[in-house]
View 1 (cartoon, rainbow, N blue to C red):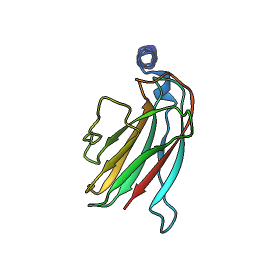
View 2: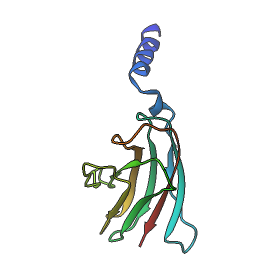
View 3: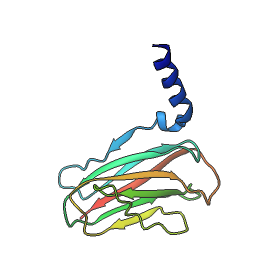
View 4: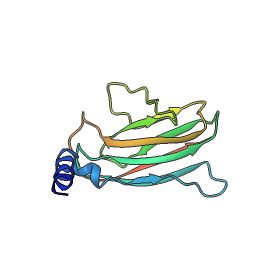
Length: 131
């Protein structure tokens, strides 16, 4: 039993605290709606917010950050239902992405702070659109 508890403590030492507190949020649309706005929170460069959205085959999924003046920038990483990174990341902050001709299933959208901008802590808004 002591060995088991020791192993658990060792694993917890290597897991970042931000991952332990991370919650996955399912994106849900109102009946008949094609877009929805969600709010997430980031605490620092190590934190991450994760959203799951279900789409049908052949749809277009757009995820964009809604920014107020002097807003903080985020980076989006989108993973397909097969686990493939479909973000097509560039060398800048990726706060607006469109995936055309989607596969059926759950897409995962991970949101982190843009590493090319100043560190910040606070809320952000994303608009999800599926057509």
